[in-house]
Image (tube, rainbow, N blue to C red; front, side, top):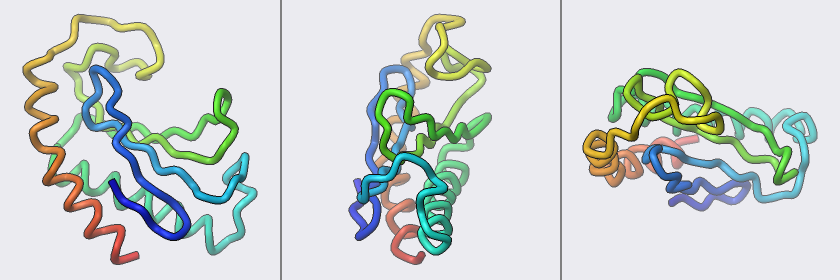
Length: 127
C-alpha cells in the first residue's frame, strides 16, 4: 500500500478484519529497542499516521496496536481497527471467535479502504 525508505505499510487482508494493516520495518531488527532513537520516533510516527487515518475515516470502537514477533522475529506493527460487532471483540484477533462474523458490516468497512489508504499515504508522506 505504501513504500517508504525505512518501512512499508501493507493491508494484511485478514478474514473478518478488513482494516488490518501491518507496518514492516525494512532493516532486519528483532526488537523495537534495536532501532536508534531517530528510527524509533519515525516508526511510531508512521504507526500513528495509520491509526489516525483509521480513526478519522472508519470510526472504530477501538484501535489495536501490537508488535509480537514470536512467529516472525522481524520488527513489524499490527494496526487493527476493531468494532464491538466483530467476531472476536473484545478479545484479541488471534483468540477464538465469540460470535458469527458480521459480513455485511465487514463489507461496509472494506468499501472505505481505498479512501483510508489515500488518507494514510498523505499522512505518511508528511512525516
